[in-house]
Length: 282
Image (cartoon, rainbow, N blue to C red):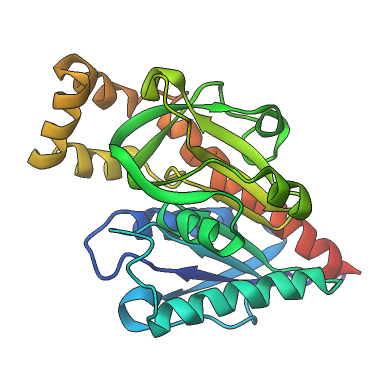
């Protein structure tokens, strides 16, 4: 019997951390690697591009792109070469997919990248949040999010790592309709009171998804953040000491951050791989 040839799937991980110490890149790499190990029909390889720090940018030879979180303002790169190259890449990906190519390109945006995506597609406002959001936070799914492949297997509300001083908010209904964008998740009233909720996840198209939270975060990465003195103080000042230690407990709860970690980004990757390999087999 002839052995079935594996499909080669190439992933580009776009690092927007600007050389800041972080746990996000480790988590993203682990999820990509673990996804490959769980499938015997594909060979997955990945490359990392330090776009914000070194100006490295991938080309369209990759099948899947994951664009990371990062520090600071999503506007601080305005006028720089790396930002122009980054937006040119997004434009090329969008154009490629709109041109009826049989093999699509897939991209997932995380936090800082989600805000950059908001600027690029102009489907909502991108502005500074009224206060910093930090910790393990509950978010709600919209009707679209409840059936979307990336979120449908989460609880409602679900729990995720959130580190933001900026936000994507006040969607433009006209642009949403024109592009077919679906909002998948929002902030909860419990967290923001009477304020307008920010958009926490959306699907731009079948191939393009983003979350303003960190779906890649695991307990180890959150312990790294929550035990830093400044961040610990921020959580206690905002929520109280009881909530801080509750967040620590949530890290080991199987239906909270662990569920988000094993659900969202793996679901995106597996959907992309399934669709890419269907074309590959044809």
